[in-house]
Image (cartoon, rainbow, N blue to C red; front, side):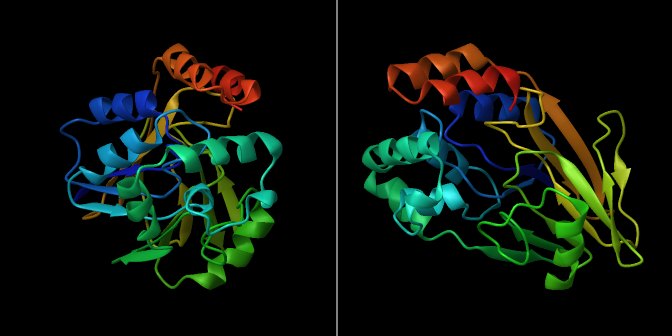
Length: 242
């Protein structure tokens, strides 16, 4: 089965639509790793668009839970809190109900799916080899797909140590017998100094993984954010990918 893997859309409808157009015809199912909302200007539209995707598995993320009041927003920085407050006021009842029902963890054969980490599915950031190594003990499948950090990366379990592997956009990776934690990056707010929307394609029959990037109309998303008086720092950061 060919799977489109998306994560951390963060209410950036322009980026989401661009990714879906770029991947058109290349997938039969969708795994969304959470954080549909937060930061961006189109939370309801993003929820509606994702809900309509075929054979969808969609998890919850920390911003999703904050938007529905299940996480205290004092845990977020000021800009994020302001955006969450705006999102809470903007969500429709239908969008809110959909976010309430999203799971924290899903198993798909060889794959464990979580937003943040297998140890702490909603909040923990896997940003280094040490944290990755500790998390291999918290899932039983060969592979774990995560999001949350907004950085496309892969960690390989090698004799009890985690080896960090940066994405290569010029090849399709064949997963072998090694255990992996793999992150597709962010659709709506990349943080690896590349502003292009990030996503991945997976062929589950042979465990082939492809990292992908696509440019989108960042200025249009920024215009929509500014029109809704979202924090200026959140608007500016999209242009730089941080």
